[in-house]
Amino acid sequence: MALSSWNFSLGLTLALLVSLLFHASQSVSIGRRMAIGSRPPVCVNKCMNCEPCKATLVNSDASKTQADDNYYYLLSWKCICRDHLFQP
Image (cartoon, rainbow, N blue to C red; front, side, top):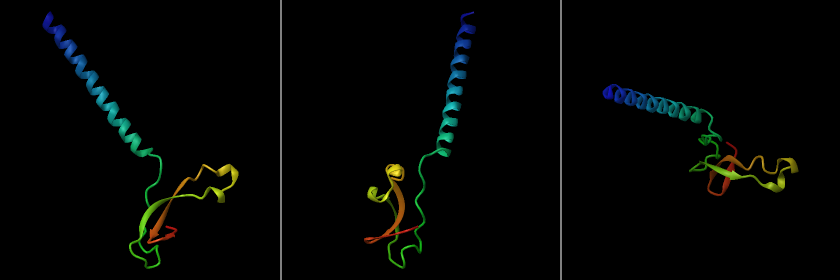
């Protein structure tokens, strides 16, 4: 009787562990699909023959935005070469 009780508790523990692992793996895959943000642009041939042309995040100028959009577009992707910024 004690052996069957131990087997039951072991089986219940294993079932709980497997269900938690399955739920965690689903949460990770959903998190990857619903990630906030964007990926950097490909800056090949975007800097008018300037080398090296790399992607960078740039803060938007708050003085140029309208009052309603002050905090909406804080960062944007640009291509940068030396001191010059280019649209991707």
